Length: 239
Image (spheres, one colour):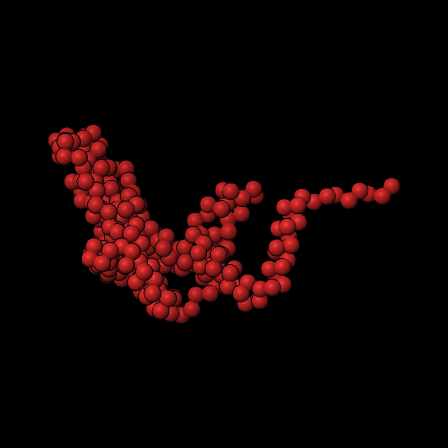
């Protein structure tokens, strides 16, 4: 008996035909640029794809290796310099954000965004977004100010990440986390030291040596400030 031909769904046929036509129409260089953009340049390399993958493949690991292999001498020197001079880099980023925020208030967010797009196309500078404005958290005046308990039941070490240090205007007296902790009788020991970093910025770009160096420094400092791990550590990573 002749085997009956399995009919493929129309959607699959159309998808295959689109892919085939794209392969024949787009030059190899264009396809390579698309792959580099979607995989090498814009991948977050955070490993979340492994959770969605049925067999747990972490594409981010492969992307990091590709980025490391493609890194030139200039990129390697910049990675070493930024890891070594991170306090200086933080001050520069903070000043740049404040300057952009002031410019946005003068000429408007839309005009600043369009100007930044022109600078991006000509000089490769980042495109400004209104969401990059440093945030300033304020408490409701009716809530009153928080006071530290004279005999706190617990002490916690509050470590502020590099993103929080450079992009947040929230002070200790108006940080909701600090205020809630103080009202609960928990003493907060805040650490906001420039240069402390978990190493994620270098890890995602494929510079594992610099990433491990910064992570090691961060762990040693946390262990030292928490009295050899006696106090719990809370990390603030957002704006």
